[in-house]
Length: 405
Image (tube, rainbow, N blue to C red; front, side, top):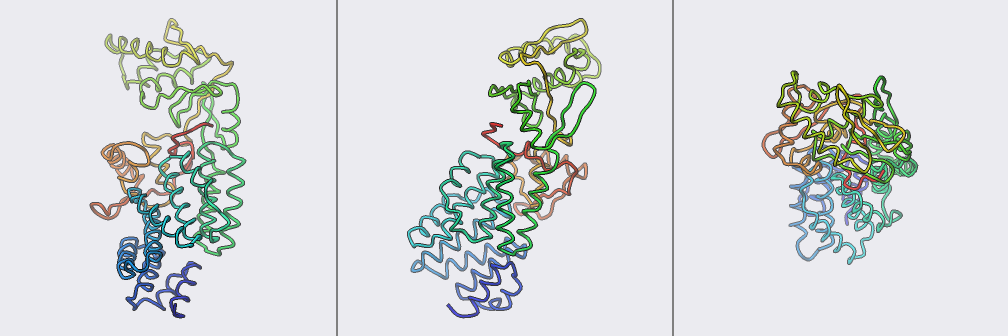
């Protein structure tokens, strides 16, 4: 490998793409094309970067499978950074297998880390953790090692486990300093700020206060009946009932929990659950039906009693706590994902949240109308970003298919 290729590769490892392009920017041989692709990715042009990497893979040809596999891994990393979560994972796994067989342990482990990172973004925490457990972090370069520990911290944060999250963030910070890449150091610092920011609000009948992730963890470990408005579940200890697919029932439950130990008037329940400003006989009939459904749904954890003016929650626990997002929004989960500072496509948001692209697009249109998100590009190249919003992101709003507390 010639000296210019070696110098360009060293510059890219230090996060200096301009220095790399000075050495290989006018060359069209396979190694130079690959390095130019990585440089364009670092400069923020993922489309050009992926085109160059594909050209490099073709130029390497079938006689150089390890080089082609490295190009595939680099393309997967660019897809993740540009939030193209639909990029085929089987292509990454195939590249990793080639690298394993070729003895390129460093890049094989990097491919495993990228797979875990994608799984974290879409909330598949168990599978992401399994990938991390099977990975040798010691074989990674410092830059990849920092990413590895950021994924470990992300899993712990979404599971509300502060001690392992803090330990992983400390290791990520050390690895980022070892790598000496300013952008990576900034990414770790942003994650630390998210970890230290308020994660939720504790809402009661006459007050509310912000809670950090540690306080949320302590609350979840208590014997209280917790109505979690971040994930639309009600829980007490290990007992848990999800109402994520039944928003009317959850709206009723939250109103009742916020009124506890008193009762919630029927007018309040109608307004919170149905948006009804004036109650009529049809509204009252519907309220009775939904209250009956809620009574059945939460029976292991609490009962519901009728009062003269409404209904009252009767928990099995001695106390009730309502956890709400730091900032209330009809589309808080979309904002929480966008708050990572990256540009997301609507299809990637839909994949991460497990909803239809049309649902996400309606949310983005509403947020754009309110000036909370911005877009650039057209068609499939359209991407969405959000300005920094006080109170975001909170890990309690991010996807977590195995939220165990």
